[in-house]
Image (cartoon, rainbow, N blue to C red; front, side, top):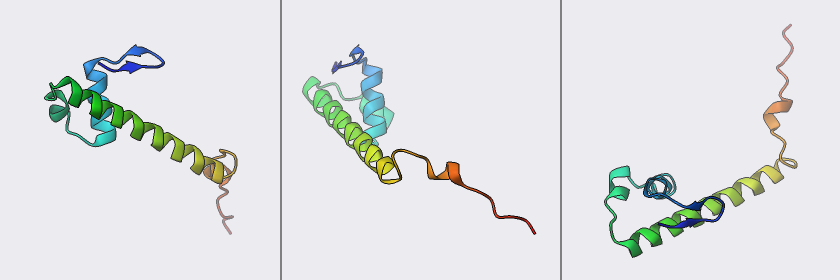
Length: 80
């Protein structure tokens, strides 16, 4: 199991979820990884990908105007 910095140790189910979501690995394939070194490697890579995606999302939000959602300013056209 991998240690989660905020919540302690990840369960096998949490590790599988990370691999499924970030590595697009089928759940059954993630479940079947029994080698501890392979599992640790893939979970660490999955966490790295998650952090990269979060960083890219923050950068995108900053480019859109300090995190404001542009859809909130949408005004429908006047009906005439």
